[in-house]
Length: 584
Image (cartoon, rainbow, N blue to C red; front, side, top):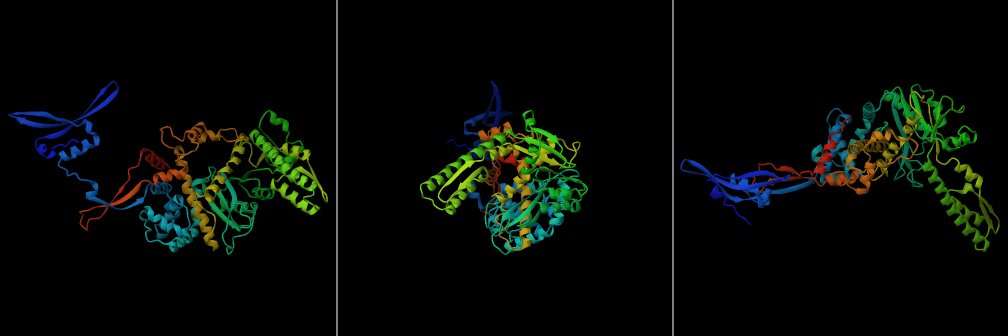
C-alpha cells in the first residue's frame, strides 16, 4: 500500500495534476503528484509520484487531504438512525403530482385528503386491507411525505366516508379531463364476491369469480377510449347487465355534460331492449355485437353468405330486422381453427367417458335407468357438449351417437361475429367500428387489475353499503394512478410501445405483439442491456432506493438529523424520467 505524506508536503505547494491523452482512439488518464518550490527567484515544479495505479477514488481522497480536509471512516463520524424504503414511493407520488390528484380530490388541503392520498399510494405499492395499511406504510416514507404519521384505522375509514361524499365531483372532473363530445365511452359490468351476509348490496347473481354460492356485489366501470377509468357505479349483486346501461347514459349526459357520445358495450350489455330505449335518447350512439342465435338466423336466411369470406374477412350489410343500423360481419380464421380444435377435443373426451359408461351398463356394473341417467348426465355436463349427442338410456343398457347435423350447423359459425352500430358510415368506417368494439378489452384489463393481486378489490369485507361503495371507488382511483404509471413505463415493461401501429392493424385478425415487444419477451433485456420488468418487479427494484436518517456522532443535541437517499442507478433514473413525462 502506498502512503502519501500529505501533511509534510502540503505547505510546499503539493497538488495533483490530471492529464488526458488520446492514442489510437483510446483515452488515457494520468494522475501525477507534483509540488511547486522556489529556487532563488525561480519557481520550479517537481513530480513526486505517479498516482494513476491507485485509481480515481483514491486520487480524489489524496486531493481532499492536500486541501487540508480531515479524512476518517464514515461510521466513525456518522450513524444511521433509520432506513425506510423510498424509491417506489417517489415514483408513485411523482405520478400523483403530475396527475394533479390532490386538486382532483379537493381544492383545499385537509387531513382527509392527505390520508386518502397516502392510502392510494399504499394500495398501488402494497395492496392490502385497511387494517394492514398503517402498519405497512411505516416501513416507507409515505407517512412523512403525506403527514399522516399518527393516522390509525379509524382515520382511514373516516377518510373513506369523506371520499365517497366527493365521488360525484371527482368523477365530473375526470370526465372533463378524459371524455370528449362525440367520443367513445367504454362500459362494462363485473362482480366481486362478498365475505359475510349483512350488506344490503350483497346478493346471489351471475358470479364471474367462479365462487359458487357466494354473495356478490356488481359494479360498472366507465372509461375513455383508451381504457382510462372515469367513473364507477355499484349495484346489487343480482342486477342484470343491461339494466345498468341507461343509468350510465344518463350519468354521462346529465352529470358530465356530454351531449353526444358513442357507448361501446358487449352483446350482453347492449341488448335489443336497451337499444330500443337508447333510440329515444338524443345524442347517444352505440356499438355492440349480435348474439350467436341472431347470427345463425342471418346465415341461414342468406343475409350472411359464407362464400364472401373466401375473398375477404370483413364486409358490411344491412337487414330489415335491424332498421337504421349498420352490420359488420367478420370472420377470424385463427378463431375458427381454435374453436374447431377445442370442439373436437371436447367431443373426443366425452366419447371416451361415455364409452366407459356404456361398457359398465353392458357388463351389469351399472343398473337401472335412473342410475345410468345420472352417470351419463355427469359426463355430458362435464364438457358442456350434451347438445351434440343423441342419448338412448334403457333399464340396463345405454347407447349414444354424435349428432353430425348439429355439429356442422355450429361449425358453420366458427370464427364469425357481427358488430352492430347506430353510427353512419360517414361517422365511422367498418374497420374503425370493429376496432372500437374490440377496445372493450381495455375495460376487461381494468377489471383484471382491480380483482387481482394488483389492487385487491376482492374479497369485499365491508358491511355498510356506503363503505362498499367507497371501497370500490377508492380502488378505481388507485387504478387511475396505476394506469398512468403503466402507460409511462411501457418502454421498460413487457408492453407494446407503438400504440399508433395497433390502431392501423387488421381489425379481424388476432392482435399480435409487435416485434419490439416480442424481442423483450424472448431476451428479457432492453436495447441498453438492462432488465425488462413487470410492473410489480419494477416497483420492487425502485424500493431498493432507501432514505437514511443520519446524524453526526459528535453532534450536539440541538443539531438536527439529516436524510440521505440512495443514488438511483441509470435504469432507475430512467424510470423516474419517464414518470416526469406524464401529462394530461
